[in-house]
Image 1: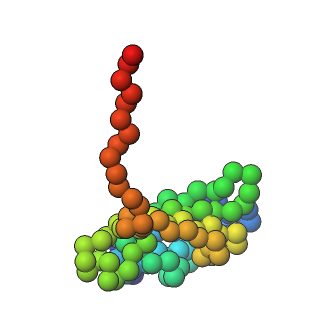
Image 2: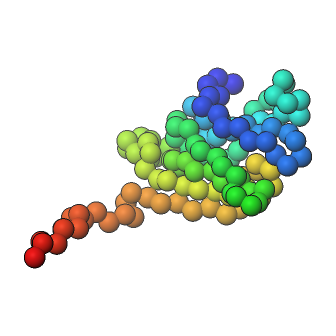
Length: 122
């Protein structure tokens, strides 16, 4: 595999390390270490379509759940120049496996308008 980079790392409740990285292969790849990061399993695809941009993964406070925020993108969107068109989130409740809960926001679904005007003093 080439270009497994800009990774995010999280320690799982069982002590393993979980790493998620961006690739040029159209989706995130993930890997695990049971050796405190000295050695890692071979990265495998997550099934989460992504642009060639890093994601951000955080633990939801008070839980063992992990949340990923990233720019989801399809091949058709890339071909039309929409490399970071959609902002997506997914929550994993099972130690880094793709989440069953997700949400997507598209720029095309966002209304643009004039900024609010400041009231005149007086």
